Structure formats: structure tokens, C-alpha cells
Length: 301
Ligand SMILES: [Zn+2]
Image 1: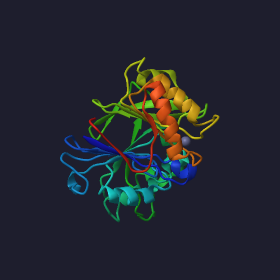
Image 2 (image 1 turned 90 degrees about the vertical axis):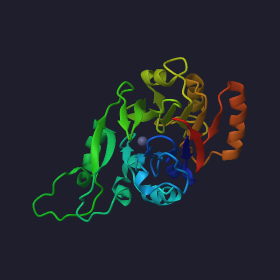
Image 3 (image 1 turned 135 degrees about the vertical axis):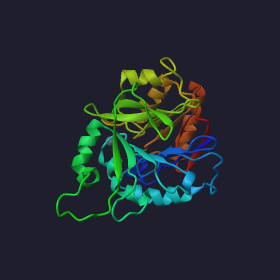
């Protein structure tokens, strides 16, 4: 079983936009991923229970790394006894998804000479080009003549494609990229994972691309067990994110067995709006809730 912990920070949009899911897995190879301030998924090793994870067995991969990544590491990695990150998957290269890359060294083994196994980091070619400008010292392989060694995160950059038909494997878990529009001039990735229990995680979206929607829709290729989807404001629309009306429309069209909403601004009232969603869910036959910090779901991936 996997224990997925969704944690959204609770201070307005900036932090609310930092969705995270821990996935802890018992009875399967260890792996994990994480989100922005945060850890998006962590899959723990066989027989692991909270507080009982053997360090050498534990692996983690995370999705995105923003400027609050450091806080997230302290908060969630210590709570779940995660000693390090095995892999990182980036949704895109906006500041709120990558400014914490520097802090990845916090969860890497200490080496003053940077002589450690680099953490694999999966991203698109486009994101790679942008990050090479933002973080040249994380991309640079060799020191320039006369340059001092400084301890920096050691990353092994791996290019993935904006294509549902180009899955990749991270720590034994097959991940399918789900390209979506995040503003009309920008493609961002969501991800699908899980064979027995199919999860799609889409944190930044303003419009679905047809092949992606088809790929994750009940009327298309498959019915998801869980759709985790962006929703920014309660009313109206936004140029780069879904708001409540578009999110609920999309949930209806895609028709997963369950949906969790993430990325809300503080104008949402968690309990009140979940009451509204309870009625909506009954009417539409799809259980939908607002996610919250520390939400845990046991699933069999
Ligand atoms: Zn963005």
C-alpha cells in the first residue's frame, strides 16, 4: 500500500501553490517524488511504516523545487524520516517550481568536494535551457581554471518530452508526462503514475491539450483512480491557471473515480467549500475534495 500525503502550505497563494504529495509504499520497490516547496511523492520501501524506515532502504523522488524547498525538507523529510531524494521531476521552470534547486544539496550526502552521486533530475529541453541560465553552477560540469570548489547540489539532468506517449521510469515507477497549457504561450507538465491505481497530478494548468485530456479521460484511454488538479480562485477565470469553475468542468469531463483539488488561494474556505463539493460530488457521482496539508491516502500503485 502507498501512503500518499498531500500537503499544501496554508498561507495564501504563494504557499498554497506548493502542492506536495508523499507516497509511501509498502511491499514494493522504494521510490518517491515531490513537489514544489515540497515533496510531491515519496514511496517508501517494503514493510516500511512511519518511524520505521531504514535509511539505507529509503528512496525518494520529488517533483519541483521552489524557494521554500528548504523549509519543506525540514518539515516533511524529518516528519517522514526521509534521508535523501533519489530523483526530481520538474513540471516546468517557473520560479515557483525551481528556485529551491539550490537547496537539493540539503538532502544530498555531504561532500566538500562535491564528490557524490548526482541526483537524477527529469525536465524538458525547454526547462533545461532556462535553468542553465538561472543556475549555471548547477549545470556546469567542470570547474573553470582558477575557480574554487564550492559545495553545490549535484544533479544529473535528464531530458523528457512533452508527450503522453513518451513515458519514463524513475526509481522503478513509470511516469507519463501530461503536457497541458499553463497560459496560452506555455506548456507545463503534469504526470501520471501507478499501474493498479492510476494517479494524475496536474499542478499548473489553464487549458487541457486534447491528447492529454483524452489520455486521462474515462471516455478516452482510461479512467483515473485519482485526479489531482489545479484550482486557483473560487470564481471567474485566470490566464495561467484553472479556477474553480474550469476545474470542476474538467473533473466532470475527465470523470476520474476521485479528485483532489490543489493550488487554491486563501479565499477558499476549506470546510465550507468542501461542503459545497460534497453536494457537487453527490450530484455528479465523482467524489471531489479540496486537499490539505498532511492529507494521506493509502493506495496500491
Ligand atoms: Zn508556473
